[in-house]
Length: 220
Length: 262
Image 1 (cartoon, chains in turn blue, orange):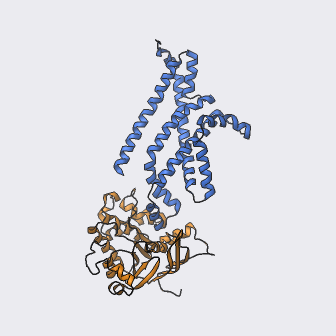
Image 2 (spheres, rainbow over the protein chains, first blue to last red):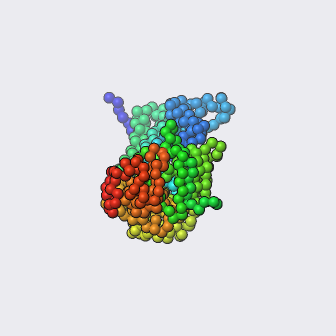
Image 3 (cartoon, each protein chain N blue to C red):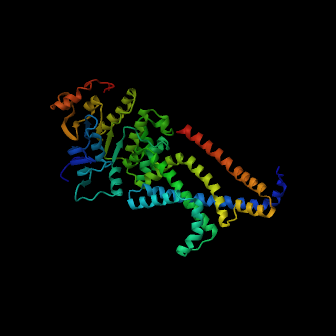
């Protein structure tokens, strides 16, 4: 029987807290950038200008249909060789995860927009509103309500996906945990504690999503 | 300008794929005139109405509302989004399914056009919106949201919202078709009052009795063509064409109450 010793983990508390800070900050960055990417790609996909719509589709499918780990490695190792553009592990990680997340966000946002009744757009048109005004004042506010639960869900996945940047030696929670595990020869304890930290950070968020869904159901 | 008419439609054509839904339609409406478009579903009357404010862009012909005119067909340039928006701002439209903005209060729905399109300051848009809500009998509902209103109330808000743009003409696309029978009257009353004030109106309707009473002229359409057109009472009481007679035979013609027909 394995003898657990969690007392040792406590000595690494600041290291793990540091890692958690990096993970949270990183998540905020990739969620915000991913949403910007996703919104841009969703609007481009809905554009009547075909080349733009096609370009956005290509982006979404390439990033949706390839593994995130491959993208990360590609941005960090392959891109400098092919293009001469060097970037830090952090930049490569943010870029890959934002683009990856953006491709999923784009589909959620596009789905939300097209789910709004065509009559809403017509009512705006009949008033003499411009397409951008209709999108901003009529369609998006309504679509946003429907998009929030799936966007939150995708963001939770993104939070966990940040653990992959540890392969590029970005000092996130998982990376620091690995460092501590190697240092202490106590990998079981450390990986267990890391899993618990991820869980404690995300579980409240899932409750928030569920409450949001319930409220959505009552006001619609 | 040679013509004094408010709305003029000439040689209008529209196809959806292979289906020709409007074939060489001509129509003109005098200032203050009320024209009712009647006909079976699929006759093209709603499409014609939607061509008048270019919600549907015609394939050929010409559309003029007030001083704004567009030509369509080979050799003409399609109007850009800004031109389209400016043109539409001059016509009010009321839809069968109301299409109120559900995320805005009744007052905000009515103010939306003046604020966003006409660029009025809120201090001017709000009294305008409130006076229009009072006009349609809903001053007390200003702060309510559309989902708390009955169908008839929603449609009256939709009329106020369209009027807030101070349009030259009002278009009604089966404005009472989605309403419970007991709610039809309140919407027709608002439309009747508008007609009396001299608003130029084109109405697609199945309320034959209402068309006979309020419209100056009635146009009967079938299969994308105008079959018969004339003074409302003449077309409805004594139609010349067999097709018009056959269509009208489905309705109670002179019932003063808009009975639940068809």
